Amino acid sequence: MAHPHAPQQHGAAGPAAAAAAAVDATTLVFTKDPFKPPEVPRKIQQIRFGLQSPQDIINCGVFHVYERALYKMPERMPHPNGVLDQRLGVSSKVAVCRTCGLKLADCAGHFGYLRLELPVFHVGYFRNTVQLLQCICKTCSRVLLPEEERRRWIKRFRNPKLERVPREQQFRRVIDICKRAKLCHHCGAYNGTVKKASGSLKILHEAYAKNADARQRLADSLASAVAANEAIGQCMGRVADDLHPLRVLALFRAIVDEDLDVLDIAGRPEDLLLGVVPVPPVAIRPSVEMDGASNEDDITMKLMQIIEVNNGLRHGLEKGLPIVSLMENWDFLQVGAAQRCVWGRDG
Image 1 (tube, rainbow, N blue to C red):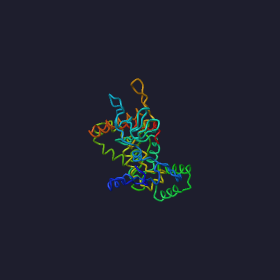
Image 2 (cartoon, rainbow, N blue to C red):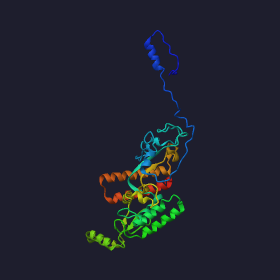
Image 3 (cartoon, rainbow, N blue to C red):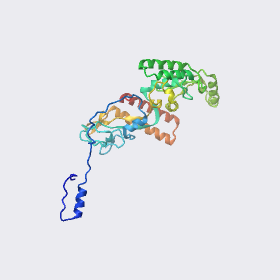
Image 4 (cartoon, rainbow, N blue to C red):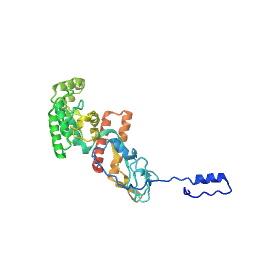
């Protein structure tokens, strides 16, 4: 385009040529280069550490990963919507990223995300999850403290001069007080011991061991089952309440914001569970090609297994498969997600 101040030439063509020249002379002038960094650098006012919510993981991802297959045959190209999709970046020097259009030397890769059909426990936050369950009522999700004492603890935790070490010590005191509380001060429900089940990522609530009324109600509700199977009656003394991820998620979502200060948590407690798994860029788990085949990274293979189990769980829920089959797939999903968190250093 011509410069906006270039002289216009009016020849024999007349007004039409002058109008065309005026249109050609119109340009867009930038008063500020949009690609030039600001002359005055921005100052970081604060840094806040907290939990990454499922929506944050989705916002950081470029697309939803749900395809189990790694390659599309026979051309042997990364399968669309798979864990090697070229929108996540590339590991070959000749390939081009389909998100930013850059090659391996210039593209750092991009994140994807994987939606889980059922939530699972985050192995990195499992201890924190158990501690929160020890502090809240398993019926109404309120902190197991009397109202006046709860307000005193809120005032202590909101002290801006409280350092990290004293804060942790105070939170341990809150846990000890709540663990000794047997009745909720808000709804009156009985609360037993909450502990991790041995050998698995499961949480048990002993709601019947020392509560005769609850134990009797449970026995009455299972009377027909005990009559049909004597083995059930022999196990009645060891019955415990299973706090599975779906129930824990509902309890955490019901916690009021005012109680979060007493629980010493930044953000919402439901973010401690995994409902969306981040899929890391291909650049940090590259495929090594050799003799017409490829050697895949362990994280890539684990993500592929998680997708396979997740898809099977989705089909099972849609078709209404027996609960035993669904629980097995849910357990496999829990184990796979736990290994993914450890290997991928999430959290």
